[in-house]
Image 1 (cartoon, rainbow, N blue to C red):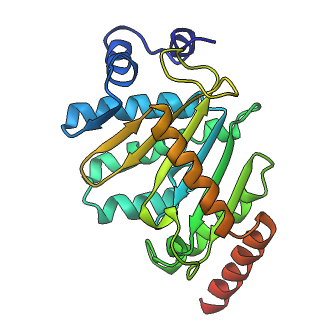
Image 2: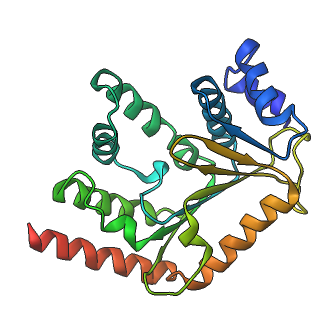
Length: 240
């Protein structure tokens, strides 16, 4: 399926379609950095489009639970502490929760999350919110299309210490984006405080794919990660 047809299915057309195409695919630059608010909004549209058309999403998240696995209370706590206007919080929560469709629909994308222990120890929103978030992680980890692996502390240097990023693969995006050997288009999103970096060149995507392989080597297995979360949940419940 072309990006053209997938965008039409998402009701993306007209000016918005042109914006996404120009920003994400219609440039010869090896990377795109969004620094202004309009650029950030355009890039978020491109990100969501990639996410919703993904076959596989890999999230490296050393310090915060990634958006697709966040509870509404966890999202609210982040946005409140981050200074999001009160009148915007509810709609933003609804929008973020809606993005879960990509991993909940009948033919869902595969989601791989390499979650740092630090993300489980921040106390975002307080003890009750943190406990609810851990319970949700356990529930989501039981889904057959979700691979949740904990990256313990004290494993020495690995690329996960450099910060969060998302590697998204899709077989239903434009051929203008470089494809790998499996005929999937791949792109990397790296978020910062003030901008978002999108990388699509083979060398860049390959570097992040190799980073994922290195992080996997120091991560717990899925079974070990499930036991870790279950033990954490018990400790948190007993502490209440």
